[in-house]
Image 1: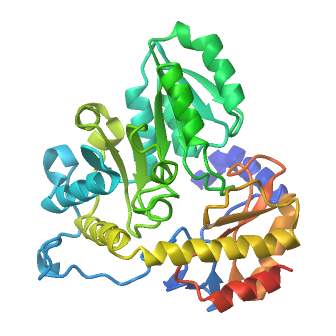
Image 2: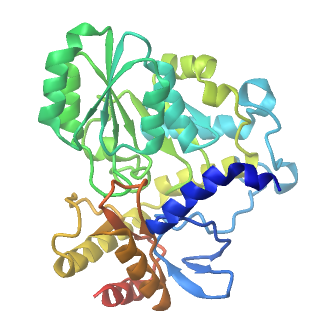
Image 3: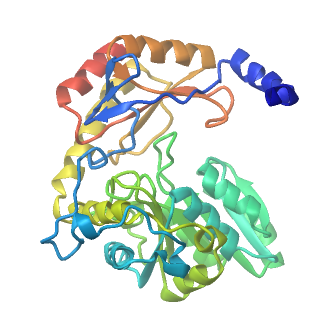
Length: 392
């Protein structure tokens, strides 16, 4: 009965449906790299960000390990925000491990990657500041820029020359300047030119903030991300990451100088007013960080598989794959343009036994609907070869 009052929303949904852009939540069971759909169909999952195969591994905290507590003493929930009583010894251990991995003074954990990205930008950039954001940044970074009271400019994707022109024209008008970018862009698989961005930042007295969400655990000699891979770890003071991709758990984090982390703890609304992450997920994240440090063979295998897959599909889909790096990033988009076409191809792959999601606006720009293939080190190489054959 009350739904009749929201007929205007039904009209909007119909417009989305007619544009072949309607999305529906479907409950699925995860079984390693296989997902089981409600009708019992089993599909090889090429849509997950579980790059190192840790998210679907069953984990029970080991009572003999100094890094975790026994299952009987690990609470299901934190019970309160971090500043009230939700910050446990597990949270503290995770912060120490993240700071060590990233070689920074301190770290703080957020309840989600979205909360970390949006909260950090909105907190640090103030009235009288200049914000410069890459056109294809993640929505969480974009929303952080919108929440901030700073003056915002969006520069064309990866266009260092355009960014330089904005700085030349605008920097002198503002107290501080912030360059905001994803490290690895999640829908295109390409990487930010961090050395060039750092050069500009130093020339124009600006701060660079990098979201390492899709790079943590994948890139870098130590698995810490693109800043390490690009040799700019010491030049990017503030870095954001997620616990929910390669680390295989849930949540977000920020690493940086102690003074930055202390300020966020005292002023960042998405941290202060959110219940802290479940100790169970924090324990799993500790394990994920430890595995990144101790098992580099996982990311070595992942990058080799990703490079091989990209080379194979490049030959078959010339012109449909956005410009990318040769770093072995496990995200390979295949752009079809029209919503209806990409939905049809995704469904055909489903019938062949593969889950490869159709990514449509507003997640990507209009006219760039695509398949987004994600490789995991847990994939069997034969399944990857079968997907290549199915795509062709």
